[in-house]
Image 1 (cartoon, rainbow, N blue to C red):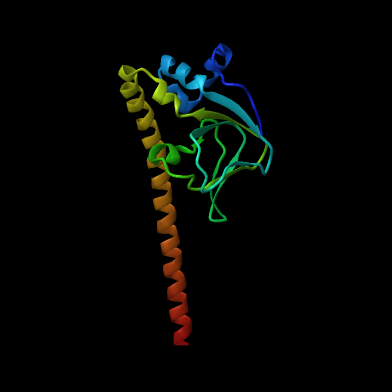
Image 2 (image 1 turned 45 degrees about the horizontal axis):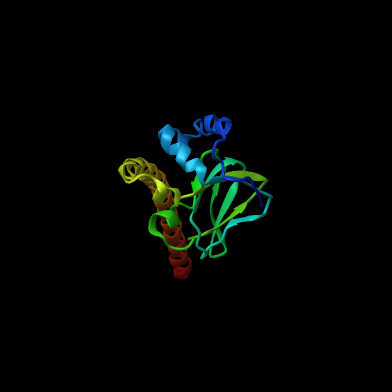
Length: 171
C-alpha cells in the first residue's frame, strides 16, 4: 500500500471529493475537518485493505477501483462504484472488522480516520454526527434490503432442491 500524508490544506482535492455521493451531503466545514485526518491509499490488485477480526479507526471510500468483501473465506459482495464505502460497521459499533476487504484491481481509497469526530468542537459534534450517521444508516439500509432479497432467493432455491429430493425418493 502507498499512502499520502494527511490531507489537510489540500484545497484541490476538496473540490473533487465534493463530487463523491457519500461526501456531497457533508457540510464544507465538516468535510475539511474530516480530511485533516484522512489519507489517500493506493492498493495493488489482490492486496488486503482490511482484515476480518482486526481493529482500526478507518472507514474507506472508494475513489477508483474495485473491492471484494470476504467473510469466513467466502466472497459475499463486491464494491466498484466511486463513493462506495466499507469499514463503517466497525465505526458504528466499535467491534473488530466483520469481513476482509481485498482490492480486485489497482484501487485508490480515501481512508478516513473517524477519530476526527472526537476533535470537533462539542457544539459541532452533534450536528455532524446527525448527518454522518444518517448517511451510514442509508448505506446499511440499502445493503440490508439487498441481503434480504438474496436470502429469499436462497430459501426459494433450497425449497426447490428439497422438493426435487422428495420427488426422487418417491420413485
